[in-house]
Length: 115
Picture: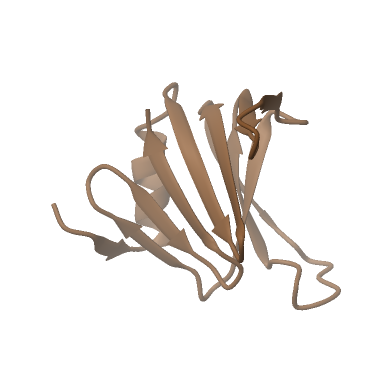
């Protein structure tokens, strides 16, 4: 299946199908790459009603579950909370190819894949 643009509603519905599965989130932002593994227990959203500047996102996609971060030295660090947050805006783009999501924001690119 080729990469297709989808809506946030479609992203939500498709991500819900991965509930209970281990997923990997790869974040590419400027010259920084992060890899997060999380046991997906739920999806939630938050709207920032007190946005002080343009760097703060309007919305946050929250991937809820226990997870860990793999740093550049390949050492594993637990997430500080049982959630991984992805900042999103009205201009964010969502793509899906049947196996992987790609979220493109003003700040970076997030690839979400079940493992």
